[in-house]
Image: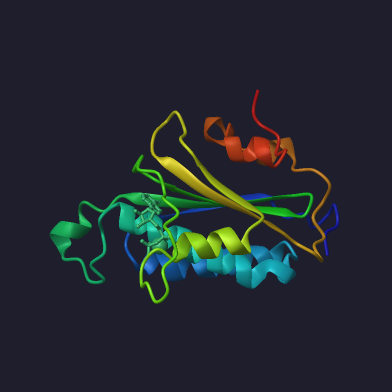
Length: 178
Ligand SMILES: Nc1ncnc2c1ncn2[C@@H]1O[C@H](COP(=O)(O)OP(=O)(O)O)[C@@H](O)[C@H]1O
Ligand SMILES: [Mg+2]
């Protein structure tokens, strides 16, 4: 339960090397954060959404080898997972360095590919993409918690800089930087 004294930061982010093991690490990060924020009713959905977005982010960098050799490791870029909460909306953002947009594919029975964004689409309230001026892109999804105990407002001190000036933040009425 939130109290003023034990208030957790309401924006949290972690960077991961863009290799497939990032998916499990990101899942653990989301699980731990959602538990800390008492958003347990959407824990599984948040973890699922983060899994799909992080898998896509890693793939977008071209690093799909589960055991990259040292030469490949030396060229691995970074991705970022950022979580924010306000008014029972949890915002999951995944940044990767590519500016290729995600493409929701047509659904075909039995198709092995093209399911990830459909899962995100079904599970989340809204999702989208924005392109920070500093480069790359952020694919985001917002989920509504039914039994959350978030505080009323994100504290200004917890807000990040320029990259937070996002379409996603505006859509969710998350405060943006001046
Ligand atoms: N972060 C991303 N960067 C670039 N392209 C992406 C990204 N996420 C998704 N896409 C594109 O959208 C397509 C659909 O993604 P998705 O529904 O997850 O299916 P799959 O990953 O199985 O192809 C991907 O094949 C890819 O072309
Ligand atoms: Mg995918």
